[in-house]
Structure formats: structure tokens, C-alpha cells
Length: 152
Image: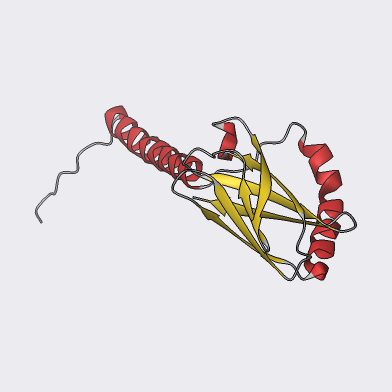
């Protein structure tokens, strides 16, 4: 019978296996972290515990806003200002908004709005181009309607 020779398993073989294994794990982790931070802006809060305690209040505000039946569409004008068109609401509203940039890359911007037509409001300030989360608030003096929209 012919004798087959087996190569001996050495420390270099084990080192190669470990480097290949942990190198692949690190590459996958860095790739996934890169995708996560570039695709989901996230929300930065000062204190996550306090934010979690306010969550139910935010849900109640959302239900109250939905019950009003008001609908709003926000569009971006070429000059950088926003137009808000409102349906199902009283004609004269006060409109304000806060624009947050994901992960705080730019400072928050507060926008005031002026009425330019029936149910149509134009922001007084320009909003720089980019990805923003807009928290819009409309009020008729009695009821307040709130919504958050992603603007791109």
C-alpha cells in the first residue's frame, strides 16, 4: 500500500485561520456600520430616558391631530422656501415649523409662515437644500395639528 503524506498543521496555519476569520468579521462590521450611518439619519436626544417617558404623550398628540382631519402637503420652491397647502382646516391658521437635520449635522432651524392664499402658507425663511425632518405645527387658536415629514 502506498503511503500518503499529510502536511503538519502548524501555528502559521492557525494564525492564518484566525486572521482570515476576524478580518472578515471586522470587514462586515465596518461595512454594516457605514451603511447604517449613511442611510438612517436617526434622532439625537439629550436624554433617551426622558424621551421614552414622553413617548405616550407624543402618541396622544398624534391621535388628536389625526382626529382633526386636516391634511397638509409641503413642497420646496426653487428659491429654498417651503409652501404648505392645507385641506380640511379653517382658512386662517398660524403655521410654524422646526427643521432638524439628521444626526445634528446642521443646526435646527425654526421657520415661520405667512398666508399667501386660501389654505396656502409660505415660509418666511429659506431652508438650505438637503435632507431635513420637518415638524410642522398648525393652529387655529383652539386646536393644534402636528406632523413630521422627511424632506429631501
